[in-house]
Length: 195
Image (tube, rainbow, N blue to C red; front, side, top):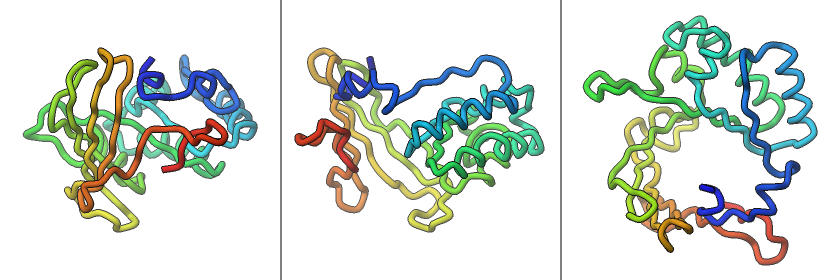
């Protein structure tokens, strides 16, 4: 529903050769990793998203507050996915208490140490299906040096239309204040537009 509201083509969403949504149940061990590697070999995806680092660690019986457990999970799960040639995006939660919040996700410092890039999403104006709003993307770590820690990397403007049935998302560079990514489709083949 959310992807359709953003303008994604239903044909693309229904095509298992273009998009796969996999829900892990229970620990991810060697047999599951081999099965996943087979799927990735077949798909050859450009992007793999792991939504919920804390949940993934817990499912594998690991503690997100343990540097050893976090390192074990990254080396056994994230690194092998990246070696297959995909960009790997991990989504994590921050600490609830803003007074004690540190850079990166909650739990062990290893989460930040083992990543190449880390960005936090900050709400600058609350939004809903019927109210426009804005997010700020802030650099927490960038090994490439494109952004400094604490520097805004982008602003995301969210504009709902038709009671939330369609949502327009514009990502603006802080330097140019112009859209850098526009949700849309190429007219020739109906595929996703390159950003």
